[in-house]
Length: 99
Image (cartoon, rainbow, N blue to C red; front, side, top):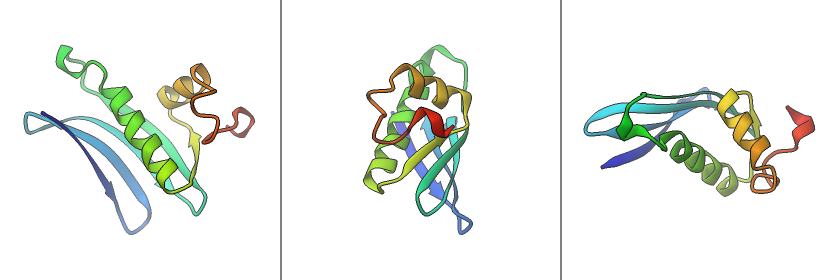
């Protein structure tokens, strides 16, 4: 079973990560400000069983940002590409001119 977890340290640096069969197979690294969640990096192990895990991490991050009323700064190429590709879906979190 895949389990997405969240860790945020005292410096407001965090990571969403996926554990599958007891092994960390994906992560999304970010930091928080008062108003923004800044995503720096997303990485998923390249295996057949991890297909779609990038999107699972993205969905967890988006849910967190919405629940905490944060805007997202997508510095990560994967998140930036997904936000641009699905601009309407993420319009409450991101304005293209901001990145």
